[in-house]
Image (spheres, rainbow, N blue to C red):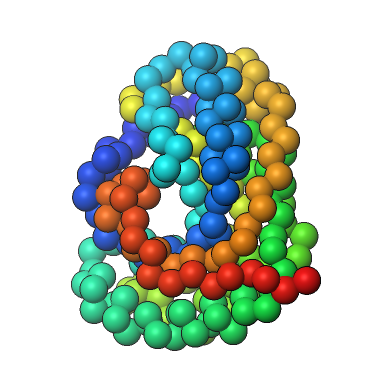
Length: 204
């Protein structure tokens, strides 16, 4: 059995800053088709991310949760963060995110992906190395590329056979990434965002 954790901030105002890859309309449509496939199998109410809010987070420079002065912290790292992205991404070729499986966690249902050029890993490592974390916090370490397709409305115990059925659903999505974006999030989870910068991936 899996004990799920209900999402208590869905649809609420927030403030966060993220590095994200751009997603094409066909990628969002493919994610939506996967959502329809597993929603029918899940026995409890779900928060299902709308198409426009579906995203992949490369790194959260300012996290949604956290009791610190987010505006002041962002101002202290904004220029350095954008410069780092421009250095790593300018001239880089487009990326292909290959989503190939669903994973059920205690907080969400996600689709995981691989990326062969190493750009996402390089961005993460440079941020951890060069951008100081918020006061009192430690750098976040990521080893997964994923998109969150649904979160849980309720706390519930989910049978193993339900999880196995969902995780065995076929997923074959090739997401072409033409830009790396710096975004401000103001309604969770990325239901409202503003683009601060976008670095095109145009190299061959």
